[in-house]
Amino acid sequence: MERYFSTDMPGVRFVRNVLLFSLAALIPVLFLYVLLAPGFGSALLGGGPALGRFLRQVATNGLPVVFVINYVSFFLFAVAQQRTGRHRDPSMFVLVDKRRDGYRDASRLDET
Image 1 (cartoon, rainbow, N blue to C red):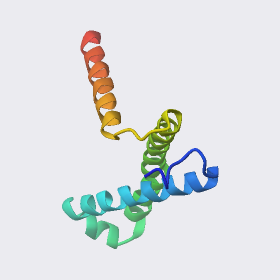
Image 2 (image 1 turned 90 degrees about the vertical axis):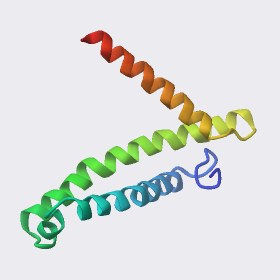
Image 3 (image 1 turned 30 degrees about the horizontal axis):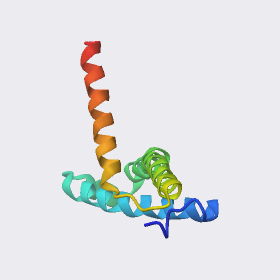
Image 4 (image 1 turned 30 degrees about the vertical axis):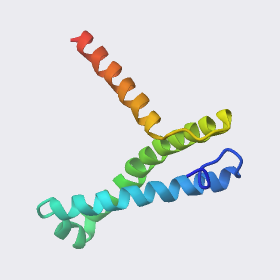
């Protein structure tokens, strides 16, 4: 993983790798969604406004959101790997993220 996401590589290559990873993660999920949503696949195959709106939604909302989240995640991973000089277990990041989500969910309960 350090080979594809490192702070030592050129920025354009890092962005390219994040974009390719984001597309590789998004396309199968969208394909599965289109297959499982009743009538959605036939509406998209018919072209017209449904296909245009779907592609616009993916291009203006889906891909940018997935890209930004992946970019931040991979950048933090690369910085964490570089600072210590040793490799950390990626599961540590999942644990930290889950704890952060738990705090965020608990703060929502206080608002009600």
